[in-house]
Length: 275
Image (cartoon, rainbow, N blue to C red; front, side):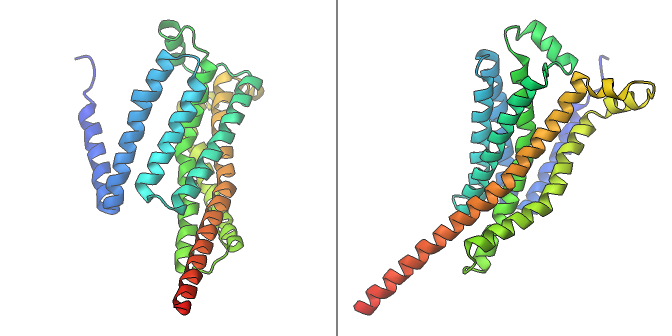
């Protein structure tokens, strides 16, 4: 016996996840499952081979694959409408800002990308010519992508429903509502990112806490600690930037669509009256 057989347990948990997703989401749940499969496929079959084969295009490949995931997710779940377009603009805008800050932070704070033994093993055996700062960049962006998409579609969806229920709602009212929703969401989503990173680093936190004689300044300055702090902060900043971008873009698109419909209605009424 080399180890415990863990895959059957994972299969049961995954089956429960699929069952609840389809039970509660119905058609949307099925589309969500398809989107999840496509996102995993793009990361494993597109991004990973690009990193392994084209070592000097990691940043571009990460942004490209992330953008494709955003487009597929929004269009498959919500269709081609102002809600999807607004969420896409907000998400990609937030990710681009996070990308810029990630590159700036990684180089200015002198992060190495070797925060665990897997990175070191990968460098020694397979990716000798790769700058692991780029690998760290890819991890930061992929880690933040889901939360930023979640916030963007929450805001855009609420604005869209508001416009459907009150067609006379103007741009300012839609934008203000979007920002108010964003303020309510940002606290919990910021916690989601920070707690996710803390949860994954819990053994490290326990190790540090169990040694009170350690210098806190030296501990916080360690590459591994600073890397995790940077991950959570950059992801949260991307999330915060996505809120006003999504609120503005969705309000603008909904207002523009409303104006086109009013002009079309007036032209129809004028044609009927002349006839």
